[in-house]
Length: 221
Image (cartoon, rainbow, N blue to C red; front, side, top):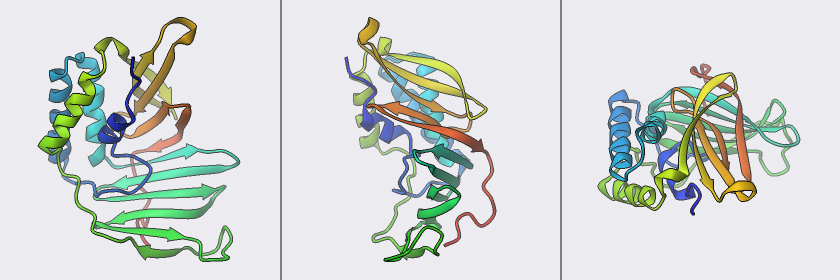
């Protein structure tokens, strides 16, 4: 039986830790996207609680939040979003060593200059190519989404409630196998749709902090 497909996670959770596309700042767009995803999930035969979590994931694209994820050896990642702006910072301790910023539809990549050391000013350059708005799912994307869902037996997907980073999170859990051989993978979301846990393929990324505001100046470059 298949585990939760990476393609499905990528499609639903626009909160991937790279800046790939602009987020709309229109709440109506988030609601429309969520309705589309929920309808597609129900059409694929999934239970309503599962469809609700998937819709929450889609609605997260228009939410304002800041989430910190712990890495190893003192490293961490901070994701900030205030649509249409978005920023991902790679940290060593309290020092930013790399940033990806999406501001007013323009993407920037900020890195240490050659020979630079953590703590030195970052050099920011505009990324190549235009960054199109996410908008709502296209018809083709919805078709692909429904196909991915249909490939998963509904019995493989469950919804659980967990506390993560002090937040009551809704988790979509996929189980493959039975007994001692069972493998469980999960994606957990805050009430605003922010991703708090990604546990799949032997990789785990869990939030340590979550807030529903973003400090002033976060998206400056």
